[in-house]
Image (cartoon, rainbow, N blue to C red):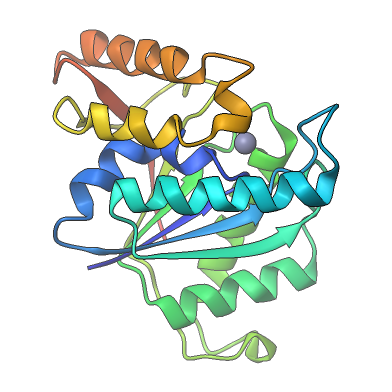
Length: 216
Ligand SMILES: [Zn+2]
């Protein structure tokens, strides 16, 4: 199966679904698409330099998780827009990539870029299904399942839990590739705590990632 992941910023895929991706990468081909390169996140490093640094970190983290391909759409960090250009680009990526499974952020995420990524990808997945929106190119493609992942806004009613106890260390190693981020805030510890919480509450594993389930 082909798996397509949409991440608003370079570290979101590892944080939201890194453990599940490490599990899936054994038998599936995974591509991660980064909507922005996260260049707005520093008061010290100039934006262009930070974008290069964070893209390099994303590639390293992707390798740790067994991700096959990375794509950078380079929208401006913090200013991601729901517009025609982005929709057509995502429809085209979905039609060409023919994923059976799509990962997107949870729509209720309080970070604006995350919510906009969810809106864009969910709408594009629907638009990619039919013989319409021809300017996007490619043939119609219907994705079977969409899983919405959580980062810093916990999902209120999770519908699917994935036991990531065996891949937790890989996930944490991937998150620690983001030196520009983990250096300031202990993201790895926060994520470990969230995944442990999901494990205890669901009773499905020591550490779990959880998702909302949508039809593509
Ligand atoms: Zn983010």
